Amino acid sequence: MEHGSTTDTTTAAARRARFGRLPERIRYEDMVEERAASANDPTRLAHDPEGSWKFFSCLAVDLGL
Image (cartoon, rainbow, N blue to C red; front, top):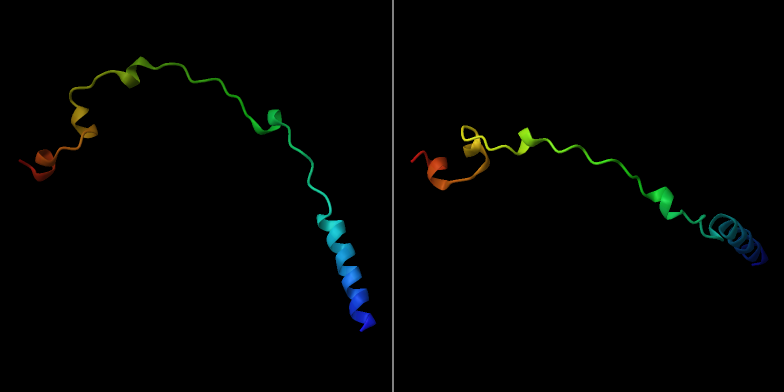
């Protein structure tokens, strides 16, 4: 019986050594990455009447009506 108590004490000490304290706190500055926004591209937002049908779903178009 005494052998089990020694094992419990040993495992408890190993558990405390491994999980006994919390990890170091991470600062907010280390968690956030700042990047410059991309420049506004007017051609990306320009209206394209030839290709505008690609971006809208229409049942009549899907059925070929």
